[in-house]
Length: 531
Image (cartoon, rainbow, N blue to C red; front, side):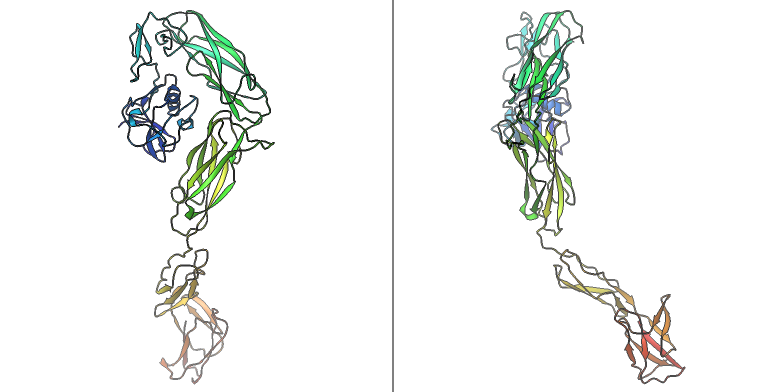
């Protein structure tokens, strides 16, 4: 199954062409990382132009096909009753029944062709007209004359005539209270016969709530061709559009400036001077991990008088997410969605973001959701909201490792659990012997160490003594909790009664005073103690 346009792993709203070539094929669209087809109900050239534009392909000769022209697809039918104006940057911004809502079968799968050349099926001495229900064209003899109306609606066709194309910029925008001069040009793209007094009327079509003489004024003009032309020759005229100030918050309204029934009309966005502001209702949301979802509200804000603004034309806003301490795919499902605003609809929407309940006690985590426009002149406010995930799993402390030459035992890993450390024979504990699991999921204190015991001997019996242990010098004139006792030796022989008395400072201080009892005090006595 040849696939063109994008890789198999996809983002919401992506499109691709299947079972054709890189410029034509069955249209498939992605939602929730699943590819599906589009039903051909109401499928026309306006829809085809949007698909071609989204794929970065030419739109001049976009052709819409129905009845599974490139074969029947597999999987779900994701879009039905698609109605595009033709200027939208993405297919998902066009009006439709909602993702997955359809009454179609795969025999109705829609297709497009985005060729760089006008398709030809008929002979050089024939006109080509739209075909029957199976998409096959009709060919008419040259006895029918060319006119300025396309699609053979009157039995004529332009494909074998000298053809012209609208070559003006695609879009203009004008604020209320301002005037915009639009240069409309027609360029000869094919020379077959002279264009003798060919008159092309310039027309304006309003969209949404835009009304002539109320929201705008347009002065009718015509473009006239008269004589012989070469390929690339143009005729132009400057038309004027005046946008009126009405003091009403209407958002964006739109009109199209077209020449006869030529493709690619010029779209003029009338930007409301009073501004339509759209954004998140709340700057932040708090949600428990076990709830599984957070609903984020987007709305058009009321004007200064408290009136809810109307929507002049349909538009979409892009919703994306950004990681904070929470990670997409682990703590929440990544967000890539579009909210739609249409005339005569409530100017608000709700985005549902799935939260992952992972049974891990991780504390509080955060991520952000951003709001962006598709290069439309929408005024955005409150474009970022922060989502705080409150972990409602029981807090637990991590497992503890045994110290070298020792061990640790604990009665649990939940808050309040106790861990007790001990050392192997011949080793003493340096540090606290117990630790507690705290409310933040960490153990109190530091892990203690097990240090090997050292026997130190001296011939001094009373007063302060100074010895060197492991290359470090220690002075002793008291007692510390790490001093376990002492023994007396005479000429290397342990004396039978040498208990002594240990006195001194508080635990943890390394001082020792030795007062032997029952020992003969003379220079022959060797005095030993263990640390």
